[in-house]
Image (tube, rainbow, N blue to C red):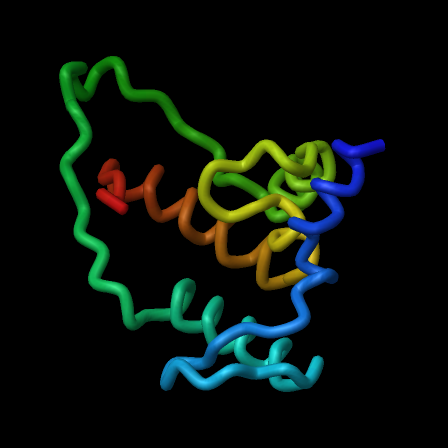
Length: 122
């Protein structure tokens, strides 16, 4: 029972106030949702300077095979199967709340990594 309560306090639906970019406290539900949307928009669409590192290319061209693109349905199913409370970075609950953007963005990222053979540092 105590573990359930503790997990519930970490639930995003329980967040009653957060700070905006100017460190002002937001308490209205609409303002909080707007701030989360703004945060993830910046995270996914730009404002971070992520650099790429070259992956180890220890195999020759003769050993390369066709790699099928990752499909949005695969990402959707993977997100559905993930359990909450286990993530180190962005909690799975956030990915599930984001809806379609949580499917489209990672799919594009994974396919870009496969195409470019480069892994982002961050």
